[in-house]
Each structure stands twice: as structure tokens, then as C-alpha cells.
Length: 333
Image 1 (tube, rainbow, N blue to C red):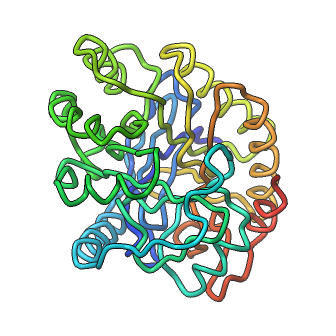
Image 2 (image 1 turned 30 degrees about the vertical axis):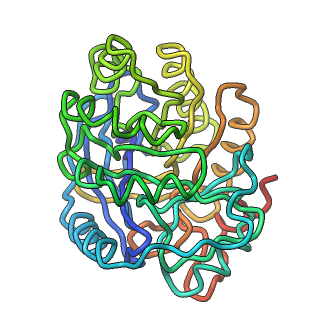
């Protein structure tokens, strides 16, 4: 596509989310591989064009997030399920929220790990041999109850979702740093906040956060990234993603988790999706590339549910019926 709209670092939300989704936009930094996305599920954020930032409307995403947050607060703590502690070192993961057939779809996907943009997984049963990874989504989630809950879920903790995006966790660097000691106190291995764009940009949000953490002696164990591609040519998209990952690793020299990625672009305010065959081809080629990067510890596709708003990106429709991307994901080792 000609708009070179690049990455839409996506979103956050919850296990309680509707099978609808959303999008939100934010410009991608020059060092980003680029992507644009209008998310369809609980989480969405758009990153903008590489050459000229494009901002997409976020009304749908914002409504979904508000609903998801409300449902999350009301939800009972997630029950533990067999095998939830397994697959601690496996790469293949997926972002999940509830929909018709979610449990069967998650099991069929073959994902070794998953997350829900929340501290728990209410309404979702963890398949045997699969690991759930909790998230502290934003400042409002830094509570004693949430921190106690995440400690029961394993050793890894994902943190603030797109703090540089006003439609997501929307946090200043100083606010995130002020809350960080509470996350460290869990004793868990901590992901960096997952910025919407420009992770490798000198002086960008993540760069400032990392410098502040280092100067204070704070612990950050690995970097979490989002990436959405608006170039639907498989080889080009894979090369852009690899370039973004390499630039980020070169800046911080920490392991990387790619916690959201897919092909979704923007032409102005209009979301553009590749064909199902293009999405599947990218998924196959990208995951093969990712498995060859020594510093890339895990990746997570966005997302498990297939909805109209996310075009060809979702892996399973209602009733756990796989899409072209879903079948490609199932075939990944």
C-alpha cells in the first residue's frame, strides 16, 4: 500500500472484552519499522505513517476499553486451571479476550502463552501446557489487590500499555517511574512499558523511562514492543519488523517480547487490511524470522478472536472456526 502507514501499536484491554475491537492512532517514530492499525479487539492503537504521521479516529476502541475496564473491575478473580504454569520458555503467544468459543480456540491455536491486558483471565480457561502472563495495564491497576493477584500467576509481568498514547494508559515518564518500585516489589520479571511507537527513538518515551530507571537503580528485565505493518508485501513487512526489533535491541541490549503484531494499515481515517492470504503469508514468514532472533524471547499475535473491525488479523471466529491466519498460526511450531 502506498500510504506507508506504519505501526499501530495496539491496545490494551481485557479478558472481559467484547468480541469487538478498536483502534487508536499514534505516530510512529523514525526508528520504528512502522505500522498502522485500527484494532478490533480489546486493544487497539494506531501508529502512524513513517513519513507523515496519520491520526485515526479512536471512538470504537475507546468505547470497547471503557466497557472492558468496567467488566474487569466487576469480574471475580480468575480461577487457576491445570497446566497454567507450563511452557515458561516458549515463544508462541496470542492476545486474548472473551468471545464465543474462546476456550476451544485458545487450545486449538497451540499458543504456549497468552495474555488478556489484565491481571487475570476471568472467563478464559488456560489449556494444559499453556502459560498465562498477567499485565498491570495502567496507573489505576497499581493496587494491592492487583499486585497480589499477579504474583499468583507466574514469574513474568507485563506492564503499562502504551503509556505514550492518550487513548491507552496515558502516563508520563515520571508517573511510571514513581509506581515502578511497587511492581519491582512483586519479585516478578518485569517487562518495560509497551510504547505505542518509537521504542528505539533517542529521547522518546521509552528511552526516557529506561534512562530514569537506570539512574534510580530500578530493574527492567525485558523490553515489550508493539508493531503493526501497513505494507502488505510479505518480504517488505517482515524486513520492516526485523529492522524495528534490531534497532530497539541495539539501543537497550535487553531481551525483547513482541506483545502485539499483525498487518493492519491506515489510509487517513480508513483502516485497510490485507487479504486473508496476505495476512497468513506474513504470519508464517514473520514467525519464522522471529524464531531466528536470539534476543527475541516471545511474541504474541493480535489477536485470537476474528472480528469485522480487525479484518483478516483474527485467528478464530465464533465457535472456534479458524481463519486463514488462524490456520497459519496453528502450523507454527
